[in-house]
Amino acid sequence: MILFPAIDILNGKAVRLYRGDKNQVTEYGDPIEFAEKWVEAGAEWLHVVDLAGAFSGESGIDTILTEIKKRFHVFVQSGGGLRRIVDIRRRLDAGADRVVLGTMAAMHPDEFALATYQFPEKIVAGIDAKDGRFAVQGWTQMTDISAVDFGKKCHCMGIRCALFTDIDKDGAMEGANVEATVHMQEETGLSIIASGGISSMEDLRALQERGVYGAVLGKALYEGTIDLKAAIAAYETK
Image (cartoon, rainbow, N blue to C red; front, top):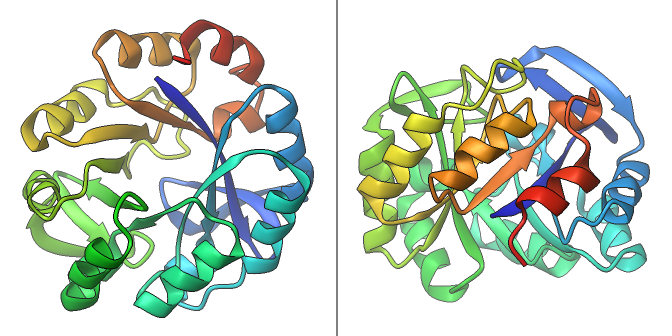
């Protein structure tokens, strides 16, 4: 299993939201300092999200992303604010090794299809779900598409990896939705990165035992309920 420490950026600061609510923000500080901390703990990947971009479509983290890549030897997976091909290219040029796309699929399906063709191996499907439905626009809008059906469509388009977030769990520190994550992986054929609610080593153990590909660690790291170095030693597959 691959562990992805999360750095969610809003107004230049590392933050966490509670259940995806942009009005319930906890600010933690300088994202560069957290990147350094996670890399020193052994992280080989970082999950860097532009929250302002996710809500508005206007990206603003390129300089931070470039600085992270310049200073640290780490792979970066990045999402938020990627609506057009030009946005993807700019994020990749800034230093992202692969990008997470969700809203683009619903709002600009032709661009999404083109992205899967132009950037093979660099696209991760962003499957944000609430009550089983696919959510977009930084989780502020619900679609009529089931999250599983969207995942199946992505697999048919050649995408092989997806970030699955249970919105009701995200930032709540109530434990991962293991069953829904495993169901998504089994039903879609995608390699699933679990996100939302992961709060303990037990959550990581449960995900690893069920064969989940990866896990994003957010508030649990910032609040200290999971020690990243210990988690990598125990659960990350080299």
